[in-house]
Length: 304
Image (cartoon, rainbow, N blue to C red; front, side, top):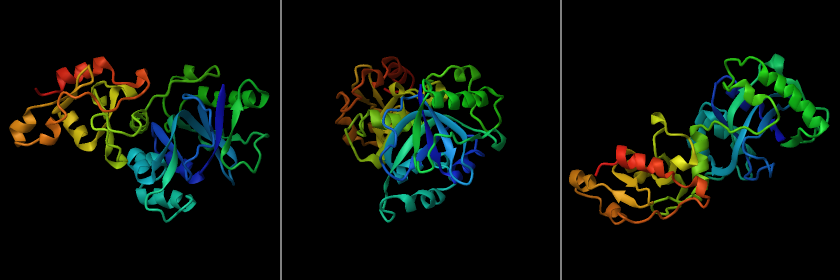
């Protein structure tokens, strides 16, 4: 198993270790990932900078994406490692290639189920971790240094979970293996946004600030944070979809409720799309809208 040991901003770690979050954005000021072949579910460990120089926790890799700073904040908020957007910008903007840019793109590494160890459980930097490494490096459990580091990490993960760690069954931490990350709302939004290639499923609109990840079956009603339970929608269609005034049939056709006309005497811009096939769906079949979930929305949400 390959995993990543990433050099971590100490302030970011300190803030999040006290927050008890279910996911984090391990951001970086550039839009290029330092790792190229990290698989979803691989461990991603946090190596603190000087003066600490210890491995102090980690999470499980979900996805790397490039987002405007404003959208990264809207998506993850305090899970970016700061209490306010102003504090977040103060941390990252000075490090971007153009600190004066209106809304710079930043790299976003989405991690699920993060864990933050108390100081007495921190692991000293591995001997082979060179002092001039500024972003991080891969380790492989089939090699001696990777097996040695993972063995120590595993002891920490098998220990009783403290209040500021994400609660996961300890059995998942046993043998070196990838895990299926338990996705949070932020990860869901990033995954759906990228799966739909940043275009609205209904209209094809590609203005990123107005695109939102909609759950077909709401998370509060047992809908999973999975791409197949998502649609990337323009914000007005998202609202109408949640209200049951718009739906998508199992045949991937758009239906517009007559109640829009009946209650607001309007809706011409929407009715033009009635009966049309979705303008955009993910290329991967497994990421396309789940037929059973679309049927649920048709039967339990949509107002004919």
